[in-house]
Image (tube, rainbow, N blue to C red):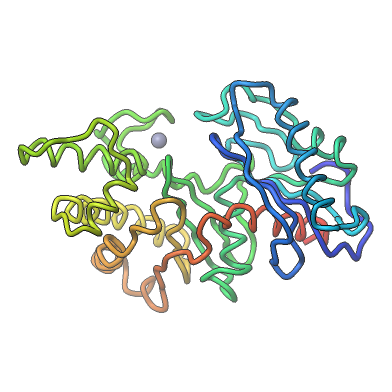
Length: 324
Ligand SMILES: [Zn+2]
């Protein structure tokens, strides 16, 4: 956080969803309406200051284009890959996508350029806020969101509050280990769920199946490609997702025991393929958790698509500006 509370009555916020490849930004109203939005390449090889210059200019341009009076904008909300410090508004160690931006005071940088207080949180935490605000978890105070994409992120809302932990980095659910002797992970552990069920891991699993079956394996298989193959009726693609569902089910079982959520939401780039693994997750969780924790538990797919991060960034700005 930087710049303290806003004056009040601000009906709009600037929202920024920083990703390793693209930055989405826009102006969002208090009811969740996106007034204007845009996406620009993050270009993480450049300086973070140059990125902030471009983002501030683009946000102002959206405002001009949409006829928004800047005085009606109360704050800036930023969702970013972690690890980061919510309290300091700093990207402490945004790996692996933004290694050169380590230590960047992102809130101060945007607050200076835009003249509004800026608030930062982990992108998966922002996802959890958006699901509770406008998505499938509305009305629920105990929500876990898993973002399945390049990596696996997690956001936990427990008893109505976003869980931050001691150093603001709670909810790194992609690094729950499902095999203590599994492959080495960048975090230092072995067998993290991210290594089995991220987009890249899913594509690699499918590639190996194709080779085992003696079929031609393109070098550039993506999770999107596996999804398209499944949609076209490919049994190996479907089997790939079924295995991913088994692994995710084991991890979600652990998550359910840790947080006793009412709702677990599958979100992120892989969510569109969820019809091929959601039922598997549900049945594995049913096998692997105490019945008391299954009562009322729902495991669902995010309906928010790729606007989830932007809406979550907006929500955290509204909440912080209101002092929630
Ligand atoms: Zn790990």
